[in-house]
Image 1 (cartoon, rainbow over the protein chains, first blue to last red):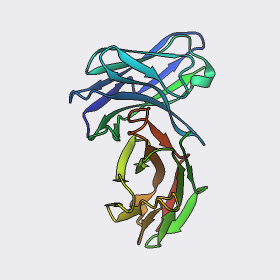
Image 2: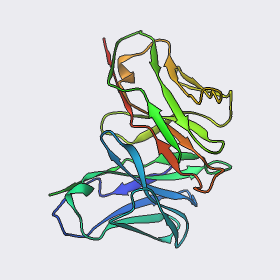
Image 3: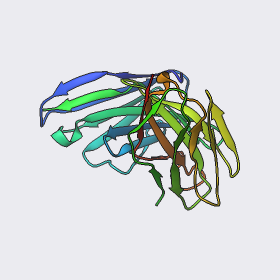
Length: 113
Length: 115
């Protein structure tokens, strides 16, 4: 357990509405990540952060933005949700000499109608 | 770019059977390799890892050996239990490359074990 919580755990929203998912960690990890999980695709990286206010894009970043104003919180925002963003979203932190090992939060299940 | 390929699932076994889930990878650097497990309704848990060639990762009776010559990291268990039913993901981290700590996942293999 790497002290990661995600909120909300479940959300239903309508197309075109903004949605913000929160990832909170209690162990002062520098690196944090957002992934989405879809059948047949495994997990795909959306965005990651390597420090407060330092973020970068992953492989599926279109339609998503992130913010990290405090070490412990990493927010993922869908500016205008679409049905293709229906997914399970996982937050992760990394540990290790080269940050090679990641530990995951419990996930947020998002349904966009 | 980096990629991970897992054997197609689902895999269905009887309790106490031998398990192998194949995983091969493509990477430009010297990746670390991982197996994660996801139980129904839960997040991913790290099962085992290996950080260099010929390393063997092991945990809970599962093993995988980092084979650089065949670019493989196959997961094995000698005797599966019903409680091993889950989705298994192979992944690599090219932490020494330009994408610091980024994980690349395979598509996952569903394992169902019957009593």
